Amino acid sequence: MTEPDARTTYERGRDRHVRAATALESREKALGAARLSVAAAALALIASVVWGRQGAWAWDALGALALVFMTLVVVHAQAEKAKERALAAARFHDRGLSRLALAWDALPSGSDRFRSADHPFTQDLDVFGRASLMQLMDATETRFGQERLAALLSLQSPGAWPNDPIARGSAARELAPRVALREALATAAGVLSDEKPDPLPLIRWAEGTEGEIHPAVVGLAWVVPGLLGVGFALGASAHVASSTLTVAVLAEMALALAIGSRLNALLATASARESLATRWRATLATVERERFEAPLLADLRGRLAGPGPSASAEMAALERIVGFVDARRNEVFRFVIGPLLMWDVHCAVALLRWRARVGLRLRGWLDALGEIEALASLAAFAFEHPDFAWPETTAEPMFEARSLAHPLISADRRVGNDVRLPEAGRALVVTGSNMSGKSTLLRAMGINAVLACAGAPVCARSMRIGPMRIATSMRLEDSLSQGVSHFYAEVLRLKRIVDLARQRDGVAVFFLLDEILHGTNSRERVRGAGAVVRDLLAHRGLGAVSTHDLGITALERDLPGRVENVHFEEQVDGTQMSFDYALRPGIVRSSNALRLMRAVGIEIDDEP
Image: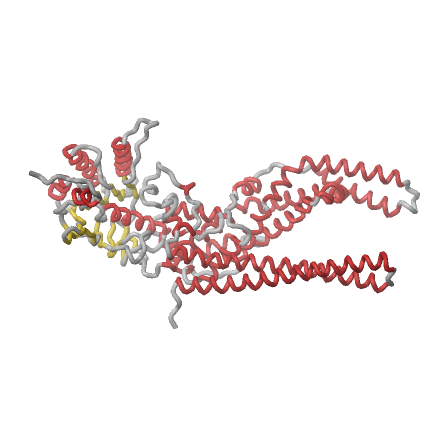
């Protein structure tokens, strides 16, 4: 039987969970109404006992109503949590549909914080921000998962070539068809809210040593409430005056409040972390229940086990402690019951014991979880694009692709082209008329190289790629505040790319230069561009340069076998102009600048 495609899978999943959420909401309302009715009946019974002088049966009935009410409270809470899980699962499928439709406004757009003008390529290749590669691929629900995916897509930590990209690709292939697992991960992490809390405060606290409690204080927390309890128990038989007990109670409360004031920072921080503990515990437990074949996934799951209780069990312990801490939110408990039991000290001791036991392991758990979430995002991308190819990695620098296209363009509009750079020291010079596809080709080459290095499938029929360092010069801005012109900004960018190529680490630079040096006159542009390309090729660079200046195409003649001219062109039918975005060999023979100006209403005189 044929497996359903991604769209069908997501539509069925969304509809199923929306129906479940609707049914649970109806049940939740019914339970709320029943709870209100039981409460009203209990109040009526209390009134009848007070004013009607009912018999002992009334007290029995009142107890039964109290039991029913508490049962309804528990069942109502369970129904509410089940509804939240169903809504989170429905959101998982709904976001999958939004990614398929490239519905950017319906997708999370929190990746702007990863943008950097100083990065070698992310700005030019639309890796972060709205309508970006990150927005298309981000299926994470935690901050550390999102940060790990961002690191992969910006190639901050690509790992050893080609072992690490191959390992990530193998893991993504295994996770791609396991929609139920990816749904469970997203549901466990996203059931509480749509935000991605920062784990660093918790990690810093877990790895720190501040907040230690003197053993004498711990002893007082056990002895003083115990003595007070004994005093109350033996007060009448021992003829202890009530005034003495009152003074003892007030003294203990004052002592507890004084000690508790020094613990407020620790307890308040722990209380604020409850949602994080709950979220991470459920996600960790989801991973621990799975069995994986891919070595990387198996290794990551193994990091959550280790000696002693599992990661999810330890996070559950933290969750229970935080639940006790949050009892302080009730003012009566905080200022009366808590001080009598010296509650703050006991909670702080439990937190510090948890930290001493597993605090140094927390970062490793969350790192592993973030890696798994990032891999699940790569897997979702693969599942949603079954026609994309898994790249073949090579030991030497190269870039060859068949039907290469841009993944951020919808399937019904994108056009694939064959691109061939079989070795280091090779370049394409791309010419063509305006809007014909030059910039899109360069961006397609770059963004697919990013995907391949990250371990994801690429928007092509096939691809072979070797180790490389991506560097681009495309979108440039001048700066009035720094006195930097557009041309000078490009010169600085080109200098950075050349410097990268000259590094003696043996990694070739994959350069993509769009409309190179278009801010100067033709003579200087041809000489400057030629110098840059020669330098890059001399240092084993490979890549592509786009230009309107046909003088730069002379590089093919000057560097035979190392530079190849290719072009795009427009099709003209009378006064109508169109583009097929097909890459052709050789130099473009037409220009459409004047035709475009006339098309928007600018009068251009014919040459005499």
